[in-house]
Image (cartoon, rainbow, N blue to C red; front, side, top):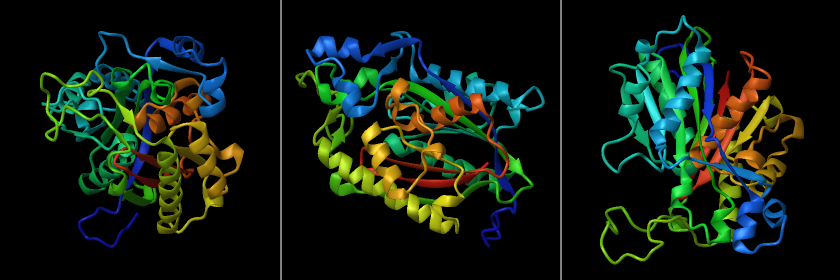
Length: 337
């Protein structure tokens, strides 16, 4: 894609391989509903979720990220040189440590020696920001980039709160981008957005500079709080729909030109509302929310990777991604395979 900027190479950013990782432990609705005293079927009726995955006690986000990245690199084939990777971007809200960032460890463990490596804390929209950054890097430098999104949200859940306990799970997804002579390959259109007026609708109250670790914190201060589910729904649907329409316009495409729509897997109600407002046909929808729930930034690449196991994406196919999450922050990307 030629942007007209002489600093951007006239090369594309092709999707060479995808990977994912979902922890082995399946947590069913029945398990959560029994603990909370909820009617059987309550969760699926309201969210479309049947089960989610929870990481083992000995698994950290770096482990999930490495497993997803390893799958993508293995699928890329023996001809791909891991040492050629110039950038590893990790989209996560649950890093191994507050400091240092987790991405350098992930790059090291994957054999991407010397690559640039950075965490992006973009909540549920993090993959879109990481993908946009990596796409520009590939075009600028002519080097491959590995984008991974991974989260362990189960350790930030109040499992006694039915609002959040049923929605979230753990998982990771990865996308390997490589330079391509097809200039149109990669990001065709993008619109990133935020809504800081809704900053505290979803948050983990303690652990940052505003409210650091300290004795005497309430028991749930380090757990996720969803303060107004109705407001989150309304604002998320609006942001995802508007961003998708603007990204399509910037790509000079319409929804009919899209081969597959992969929204952030927040819950079935949000996904369905965005699908209806955009006019996306059912056969173009890709979703994993029923079996994997909401793993924040990881949901889009995880869904892509799982879908590719049934049928590989073909060069020239156009994908539409959109997301909204805590902050609120999100956006949309039109991507050509």
